[in-house]
Length: 202
Image 1: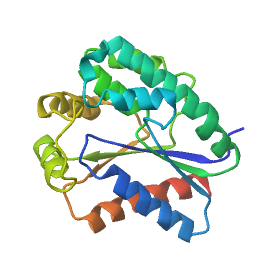
Image 2 (image 1 turned 180 degrees about the horizontal axis):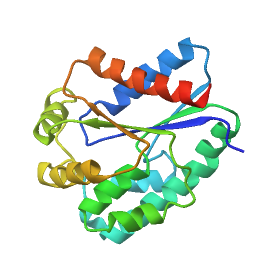
Image 3 (image 1 turned 180 degrees about the vertical axis):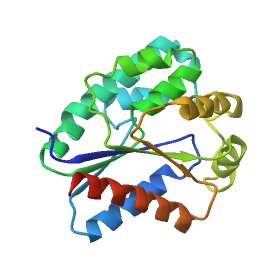
Image 4 (image 1 turned 90 degrees about the horizontal axis):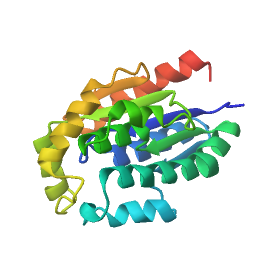
């Protein structure tokens, strides 16, 4: 019986998901709440295979790539998400199946089919979808991270990803502009989470 809450951070690369997840986790722990921070791809065997694709995505077909994400997520749900929810924790995940629908959808898979294949994965109570112009996201990768965009972070590809993210109609999604200051974005995130906590009575 699920008693915790699942909150997913989504968006194109460069929106600050990891940074804001950590800030939110610290804020919630300061309120005395039990928080589990996690991410996808995981550090498990399937996740490591996915990370190897960052520099050479052409090693596999889009369908093989999707299968890797599904295998990684099945393990993640079974070993991390379900147990943490059962213990009443607030689970914060840096990416979830919405990213798979957007990124693998942009690579040629049918986003609707991607969603349909996730019947094993609990639906998030809240998806914080951070939005940012693609050119700004790529610039942040180069300047703030000091990295060259990998195979998943090419601008033409990210334009398709952003369009798919924008098309998702799910009621659990709250879109938050990441083009503002860190403090402003985090304030919007906390407000959305506070609404969820009030609604759930926790």
